[in-house]
Image (cartoon, rainbow, N blue to C red):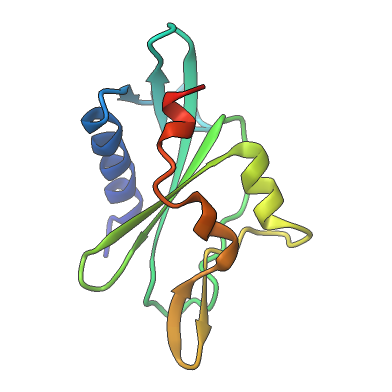
Length: 134
C-alpha cells in the first residue's frame, strides 16, 4: 500500500470518533512528534502517535524506530493483505517495555513461512479504553 502511514492515521482517527472520543489530526508544523490530538471529556489533551505497516511484506519484523518521541499513546496499525486491520493501543511506557532492549519495536515476525503479529503486542489489541479512560 503506497500511503500506509496516512491510511493508518485516518483509520485510527475514525475509530476514535466512532467511540465518541473527540480527535483531530495534529498540526505537523508545531506538533511533529504525534499524529492525532485527542480531547477527553475532562478537557485534558492526549497526544497519539500512529505507526502503520503491512503484515505481509518483505521486512522480517516491521520495526518501528524513534518511539521515544513526545506522545502519550502509540497505536500500531497492522494491515493484512485482505484489508483486515488490527489495532494495538499502548501507552508510551508500554511501547518502550514491549521494545525491550532492542533498538526498535518489532511489530511482526515470520514463523514457518507465515507472517504474524509479535506476541508483545497482542495484549494491547483494541484497547481503546486506555485512551478513553485517561
